[in-house]
Structures are given as C-alpha cells and as structure tokens.
Length: 231
Image (cartoon, rainbow, N blue to C red):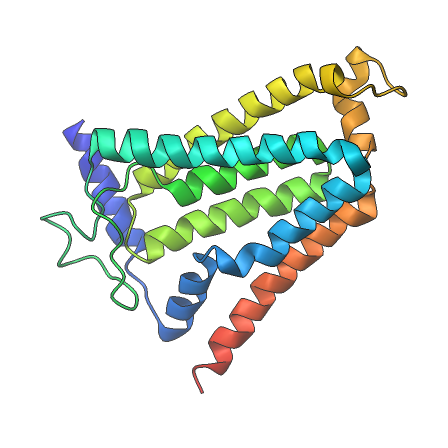
C-alpha cells in the first residue's frame, strides 16, 4: 500500500508540474460546474425532445445517479477514508502547485467531480448509443478529471477511484432504468429484447450531436477567453 501511495504522489507531482497563466485560467474554468450548464441543458433538451412526456423517467434516473455519485463519494468515502488532498497533505502541501489559492476541503478520496462526470457520461452514452457523443462525453469527463489534478486538489488515485465509482453507478442505474422502464411506460414499437436499441431510437441524432457541438463550443470559448485575458 505504501508503494502505491508513493507512486500516486510521484504521478501527481509529474502531472501537476507544468503551469502557465493560460492553463491556470483554462483548467480553473473547466473545473467549474457552472461553465457546463449549457451542456447539461442540451442533454435535458435532447431527452425531453426525444421522449416527450416519458422523459421524466430518464431525468429522474439522472437525478438519482448524480445524487448517488455525490453522496457516496463525499459523505461515505471522503469522510470515511479521510485521505488528505495534496493541498492538505503534510508532505505535499508546500510542494504541490495550486491556482488562485484554491485548496479545497481536507479530504479528497474519491473525487466527486470524477464520479459525477463519469456517471453521467456512462449512463447517457448507454441511453443515446451514439458513437460520437460517447467519445466526446467520456473525453469531457477525462479533461475535467485532469483539471482537478492540475489544480492540485486531487491525487490521480482520487480521480481513478471517482471514475470507477461513477462508471459502476452509471451502469447499474442504466440497467435498473432499462428493466423498470416498461413497467412505467408502455412502449409499443419494440419488445423487451429490443429495449436498449429501442430507447436509443427515441432520440434524434441531430439533437444528440447538438450536445457535442455545445460541449466543444464551450471548450473553445474557455480557451479563447483564457488567451484573451493574457493580453
């Protein structure tokens, strides 16, 4: 265990080493929840547009998923394991690089950012079943996870643990959602065996791709603003 913790610390220092004013602002913004509100709105829009009045079941599943990811990662694991964040670790708090003085709470295992974003990424990928969307939303989760390492508030192991938790919960919630959906809504154009494929067919490809467009546009805007602020 000591060897793994030391490797985790060494990897943190490697990934956290390079900093610049440009990337400081960029990753600080990427790590913010508010900047991704347009992305979340587009996901909700695609669900409601595709499923109409049935969409409340899918949206309820998303709410349950996010609540579970956040509750387990924060109230159970962080407070139960009590592993210090790098910014509060006695051996690292004077070494790790931070941004704008942000240090976060005392404990960091597992990362709630990683759990929440990966949970949403896995669940929505299974629901939409669109290759380009899946590539984008998983990449988005990875970038958000790295931003937490860049800011110095999480070890790589915290992020990995969050990804495992989020992916597991995302898959479990999807399986429960797929199993109980027919009990709430009578979907007449596909049978139980075609359930997974049938759910995906409810969504217009154009609406799903609009999510990708808005997400990529958000990334581009963050980079442009970060560049402009340097002048």
